[in-house]
Image 1 (cartoon, rainbow, N blue to C red):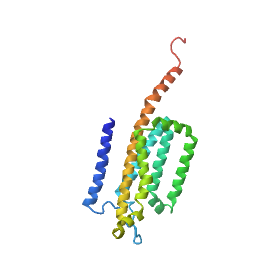
Image 2: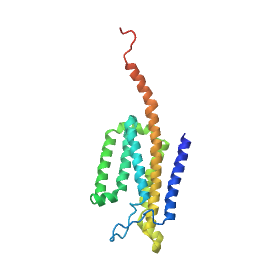
Image 3: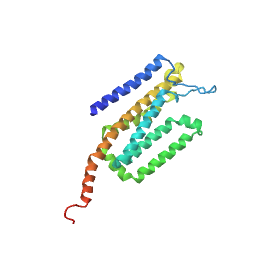
Image 4: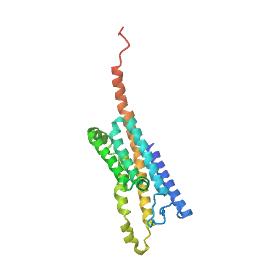
Length: 232
């Protein structure tokens, strides 16, 4: 079953990536990796790109899975809150352009700070349960993939996507759309890993919740039930 899932991951990522590249090759500029929103815009943005929309969709799916884990897998609830909070932080960062444009300038930073503060407070308050949940899963494939995806998104993309780097590499041939394209596709790879890690983590959390603890809880409930024989 696990081998089949990983084959599906491979085919799914390959298909999505092929569709994106084929779309741009067939109709150059269709990925909207550099859109100028008004006459005074000299830099352009990639926020309207299908690549960005896929990233937001991935985060939405991850958020739903973490909500399911927090609801139906109580022993993994602290970890589900942690990863769900990280997914929400990713989403706020992805929507920073629109939050600044339609709400207030730098509003996304305030919102991100509030989310992170609440997340830290929750983890600290439930730190014992968090440690128990963590050590029941680590090391595991799901946690490893989550870590790999977060590493790409938090550490690799900000450095490799740094504009002065590409200005230095390309010199007079520098075009900002090249930098945006590389940055967005690398970021998408990180989100793909995060999605796969989330799915694998969901399988693991389900196994813990519905195989081991449930049987123990059922035995305890059975022991507490009144016996029907010999009471009257």
